[in-house]
Image (cartoon, rainbow, N blue to C red):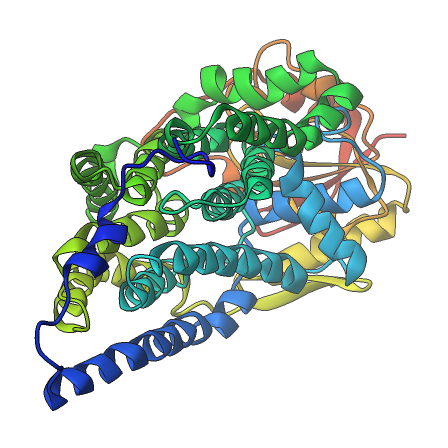
Length: 521
């Protein structure tokens, strides 16, 4: 064991440059190849920038999704107004998911543009981490990995989801740990802090981080392991704050028990019922991860092992709901892993072999990229719904109806009143127009469950009916009465909330599928 905490065993990445040396002075062709290799990373990074920026305008302006975008708009806005997650509203996300966007809202303004800017920043942070990790093996390979990562993150929306935040911080933890080289002691603590913060976005985001740090921990001295563990505890402070404020029972129930044991049947997508590119993408994650584990273990290549373990640690998250938004950004890691996996077979000073490996990986991403462009970027006209200084982009087919509904809310109630946003049939708790809570910031949410999770909001004995009864105004949307997903999302539950609406509220108006109700005074 050396003073820096590593064993004296070395990795392929450190030995290869010493073993492979030119016996004769390099020829003019070899020198030209070396120059091309030096120029390759900037060119590839330029390509990655174009890949990210080309669809950026459409991604920033595309319509918000009723629930997912809506939650990521509403939760940070409520936090800015003093609300506490899992005390004032239920959320399965970690505290940092709301806090980071809330900080951006506070510094700039609450808007869809700022929300998506945060999402883009988290994606770019993950790509920067990939560059910093892979460049130790090959700068050209790092450029290829960033191009591949840019392809997959630029074909989906720019939500600052909890998974994206956990991925970016988890990769930064690995950068700080430096699995392929000795690092200063302070970086051990920094790696722990970044890993703990990754878990602050999603509690299960800790799994890939912890797995990826195992090869490093086995090589470190006891003092460095303690520094990492102490840093991890510091990184978990956001969770500690939420547990103290909301209570451990509420946090455990809303973050762990209900999502895993109650709502999962209504959210999971069976692998046999999703488009072909998505199971293929999952197979890429698993296949690259397993191959990298085998090769990394045989060659004692800590970086390769660490990346492989992140790949495998992502599988439970992907299986829980395999759709484009969940899968595509997570492919950043297997792409980087495949590049590192191919790097020992590349010829030093040459680009050809690395380019071939990168081309194979990018070709495998082709169907997924085409599917993502079709679904997320192309053909998405928008129309804005405006209330005061706030607006959200929606599909033109529904925007006039939503605008008329929110205008009616403003007309029949006033700021400070309590608002409930529900599906048209509350016995089917699948989706609801949660962005309305963001559009109407002066109105206080009546329900604790702002999002409609199946088996929770519509369960017998749910708190939702009693809370809806306290609302002054209610907005419902019949568009969410049925789900086209192959799961139990639209299975009917308790009709208690529907009875409250029928007995205590009168209709103000209906516009398309959207209806506004006012409490009968």
